[in-house]
Image 1 (cartoon, rainbow, N blue to C red):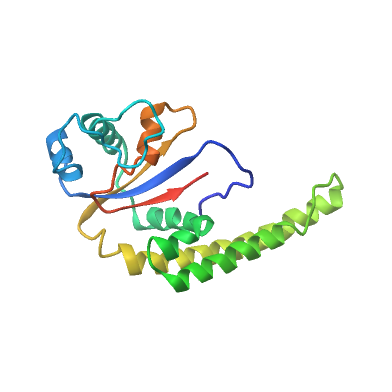
Image 2 (cartoon, rainbow, N blue to C red):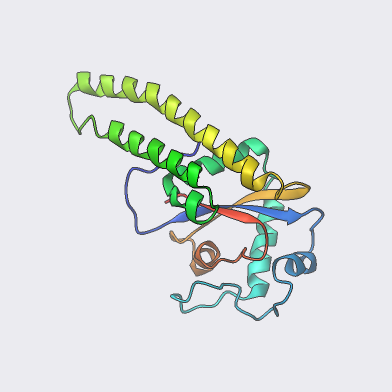
Length: 202
């Protein structure tokens, strides 16, 4: 189950569940798959013009190739755990994946969770703290089960066929002190030509 942050930050990170054709091992194979109609010096990002630097197609392919060589292929369990993070971005269910029912379910879970979290205010009272921990331990399990059920539903509807016979990797990119290249990898829609889903980890 993905952890959900309880604070707001100006920095961000995202996980990308990306499906690659089986057997991709070389730069040329990956470039042909990710950017079949682009030159090496073209801009790899389609939606990230607030940075002065440009991430070329050549550099983007180099980064991804290095990352998938270091990573292990994602299991279905790992994919489902990542998809539970969409509960925090419940609009994705409706706007990106066209899943109205799942959008409403995620909204109810998310708002119920926030409501319960507001029951206890900050306090130094040891008895209140103990009760709070026991309370949330019980309800966290229920919420986690609900998010996982939702993730399975979304996976079966939208991704099971899409990821079939593919090598799926979970790659992470961030604009939090990781350099401009990694920031553009997060925000630049670099995987636009291939099957993927982005899960924000703010």
